[in-house]
Image (cartoon, rainbow, N blue to C red):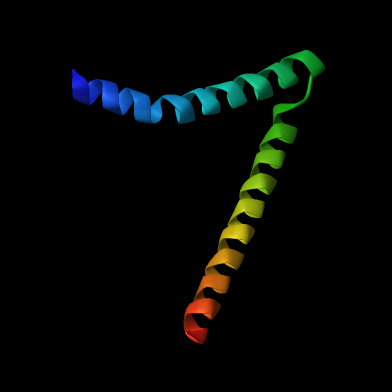
Length: 68
């Protein structure tokens, strides 16, 4: 039981954050009649932005390690 509670406490906040985000996006789609295609395009653009930031961070780390 203690292990279950530890796992529950560890993942509670991220799961609730994802669910809250999905509810926010869903309410925007239904309330303002935003097409799902627009939401999907926005999601892809956000993922590409995160990928660019991750690659830039990786390059910066490689440069800093090479200079040491």
